[in-house]
Image (cartoon, rainbow over the protein chains, first blue to last red):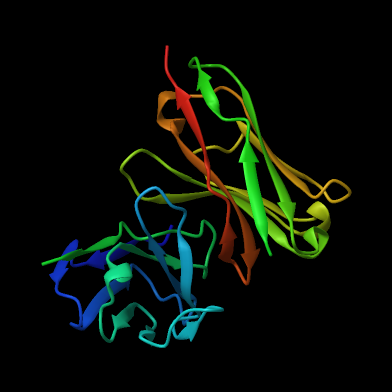
Length: 107
Length: 117
């Protein structure tokens, strides 16, 4: 099973600041990594697929990069609605696994 | 618009059974893989199972293999998860989701399953 680790566990930032979230895989997943956003009491929402492609309707301030084992989700300028938990997910090998999440909260 | 609505959650005793359903609308259900994902209270996400179009391919997480069965009814636009031999560690919110390229592009709001005596 491919294990995903995310860092940091919590990121405390102010609106307007840049957020950089990391996801590392225990073995190469090529580009087959996605990112989700989850707000309290809501289902997750797909943001990024295949490392760098924005899902339908996702604002351009969200971008993804990386390949192999190291990936990054960047939010260029945090909006109030971006404070949430972010999960990465690999689809390289079954079982498709998720990282433990990074919480982005308001500083 | 795409809608996924789960039902069937509730309180069940250890060793008991429960059947979850997901009603899909707003897209051609038969054309998509579908999946079940769960989230234990305050915890992260676990992909439990997925089913391909025409049910030709089915996968389960090791944690539920042999106990859970996923199925679909394309005529009714419905996805089910039959859960047997339930354990306390199966307690979670269960989400139905549409699978696109093995990512989950639409999710339901979830249904809570609590396994407790």
